[in-house]
Length: 185
Image (cartoon, rainbow, N blue to C red; front, side):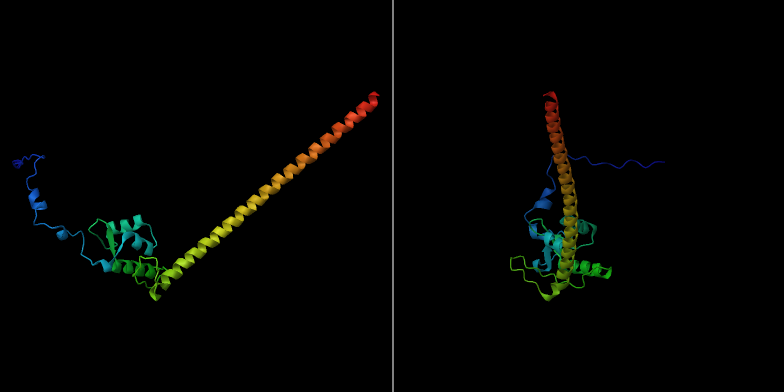
C-alpha cells in the first residue's frame, strides 16, 4: 500500500534558534569565501576587466555567472576578476579569429597610464576600432552635410521663385494700375 507520511517538524519562523552556529564569535568574516581565494595582485575589479575584454560591465558579470570568467567577491562585495581568466579569455578570442594575440593584464589604476610592450596588441586593436569609428562618423557627417546642402538649395530655389513671382506680380499690378489709370483719364 502507501507509505505513511513522514513526520513533519513544526517550527516557529520567528525564532532565532540555530543562528548562533552561523553568526557565533568563532566564525570570522575571513572564513567566508565566495570563490577560490586570490591575492589582490592576481585580480582586477570587474569594471577594469570589462574594459580589457572590450565589453560592458554587465556582459562581464554575465560571463562570471555562467562560469566563463573566474572571479570572487572582495570584503566589500565587489567582484574581482582573475587575471589568468582574462588572459585565457583574450587568447580564446584570438584563436577564434580575434585580433588580440597576447595581453599582460597588469593595469595601472593611476593617471600615469604606464603601458608595456605586452599592451601593444590591445592598443593596436583599440586603435583600429577607433579609426573605423572615425571613418564611419566622417562618412556619416559628409552624408548629412550633403543632405543639408541639398535642402538649402531647395529652400534657396524656392525663395528665389517666390521673390521672382512676387516681383512679377508687383510689376503686373503696377502695370495694370498705370494702364487702367491711363485708360480712365
